[in-house]
Length: 317
Image (cartoon, rainbow, N blue to C red; front, side, top):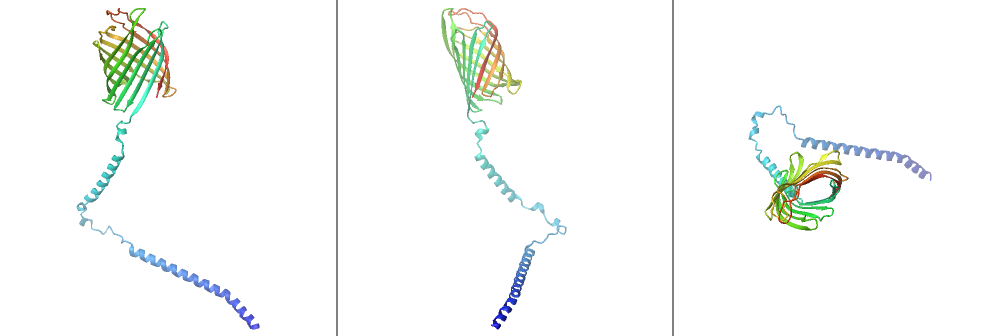
């Protein structure tokens, strides 16, 4: 029994020393392994490192840089560049770049105008443009309805083709319906179909201009000119002077108008743009009409002139 106790006490005294020795042995082994790995890595690095070139000791005269063949490298770069350009060309829509995107814009303009005698007239204009920047179709309608008179109509359908940066050439047809007073108790309706050729675009000093030459039945020929320009007072308040004139070169119809300057309207419109789609305005204009010529179906009428004033609203969508 006494011998067993001595053995247990001896083992107890040796256990801490054994643990300490084992720990020191493990630490020493790990340190030696780490140093060996670091030494191997350094040796490999030194073996694989490229020798440093001493450019000062190099004989550049013996090297013929001009004789180096760079053509293959340049050819490879050219091939890669052409491939990228070809891929970009295939993925690019040139129709949008050259104005081939189709769009449609419609403008509706209604105004009520009074003359110096207080007689009123409703004037309406509707215009629709359909097409691209290069090719468009214009549909235009002018309707005039004077108090106690029947309405008069003027319809145009025009093909428009761009011919320069600021001008389109146009060709098409015009259909017009005019109400003619034969006397105080009877009226007649005259319907005409005219061929149209003209120009649409921006004149110098930013005057938007439409100029049309008309040729129709009964040896009718005439010229129409409409021009206008926007003058910005503010971003929303805009002043627009305008000029409309009609010239008759020849007219042999039943209810012919006098040849020469048949009618002129010059005015100033002041509009307020609530938005680009809704634009109310007031209008002041001076109007001149030469009158009708004497024919077997009508008597000659005198010219008329005077001031007009009114208001209207324009819609664009």
